[in-house]
Amino acid sequence: MIFPKQTLDQIRDILVERKQTVAVAESVTSGLLQAAFSNATDAALFFQGGITAYNLGQKCRHLCVEPIHALDCDCVSEKVSVQMATEVCRLFTSHYGIGITGYATPIPEKKVTELFAHLCIVHNGTIMLAKKIDPADKTALDAQLHFTGTVMDEFLKTLQVSTHHVDREPYTFV
Image (cartoon, rainbow, N blue to C red; front, side, top):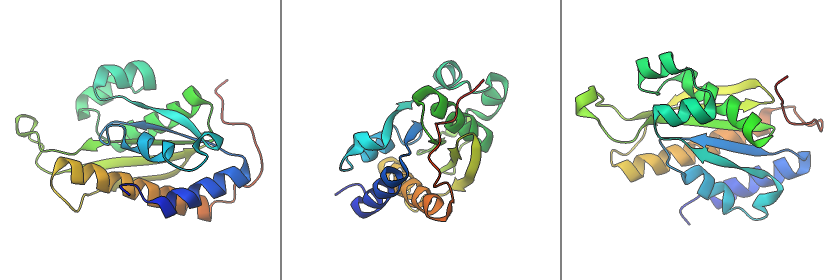
């Protein structure tokens, strides 16, 4: 299987037991996170959905990414991943939001030679994790799969160490 079934099952079990949900906002993984979560058994019990926003215009329009900063960093920064994760919680009325943006291929004209991604996991408006991920492989698909697997692993670790067992409504903005 292309996605880590055991990890997905553990994520599902924790979220279903806690009656909590997750949504994803992705760019560099091009929908792979949505595909992974949707392939979990009983995905509808914990996976609210996701959005793939691949360029600045869509990230600003749908995920409320701050446009001046996004333009300055080509939409690839920790701040952008935080904004993506936070807004996807609101869009999908989920407890957890995952945001990821980065580069899966070099872009010589933009002087991007290193592949990396910025990941953020938010729970009810609180940043639980923000980190940079470097891929083990240098081909685009291998980098995307590595990013996807790393997100799953980091999300599971976040769930395992969190104490958010209290059933609460998903984070909403006033």
